[in-house]
Image (cartoon, rainbow, N blue to C red):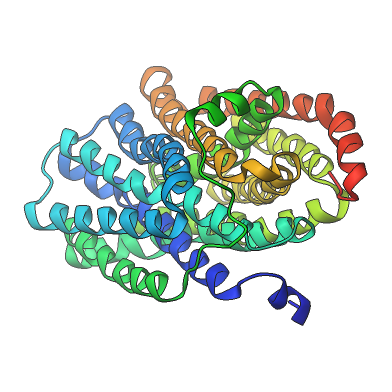
Length: 400
């Protein structure tokens, strides 16, 4: 980062939004690394396990749209503070009152979805501080907060074995309190924030085919990332008989590489164009998932293929959000909510689909295979819009 980078925007807001995003994502997927222990305790079936870890993803997806509306009315900082308080109170109540049924777990999943909706707050808040030529790197850095899923996968299972999974819920609220304090002290709304948006603005954007393309692209890249992050602890435990802790370590390895390459994906998109970067991402993801679908790999072979797929998906996340402010500069808040929503919906469908595939077919092949086909469809979609988007962006000198 050069001096020019620090002067280009508001670095304290960028830093604290990364922390907010990071801890929120750790909490958003918290049920995933605890799923093996929770399922044993509550005697859940494969489809129930899939639905349990997918519910926070779906709730977060839908709430991202709500957050997109709210930040247009109240500004991102105020909405961010309110949403963090909801998550903290929800975790503390779950710890205090206890959770003893599948229905109660789904209710907690909805509350954790509020943490997943932080995406629609942190990214626009950062984006409005920085010029167009730095959007890929800046949104990649802020979006690297999805690395919080690494910490959840790495530490939650061992901590749950030591103190019980219900107590982990209470302990998770403590770092959130620290981040809330930092957010209150250092985060600031940009003076370049656009005026409040209305429902008519949403209708206007949704009448644009390019908005639907971006939503679909993110549904594959981020949907694949968060869906696998949520389900891999269950997959490694069920498919290979790994313990909850070892399955968590395997998942953490996959999530780690996928999380920290997001800024690289944004930087690569700034350099060669987001459409070219995404075309490579989707083709590679389809290949890796086809290997999982049709191969019979040992545990470490599956780990390698899934880690490579997660790496590509992480870069794809950064590339999509290099395109958003270039195509819809005045509607970044709107598009962040809508695009983020479809990313969450994609993650819900993947996680739930893998659970149902296991329940009704006895294996995970149909789930992975279907997602590989969707990645190929996204590759074709990129090819169909690339020339038109590049022609429009050439007028502003930005690579698309």
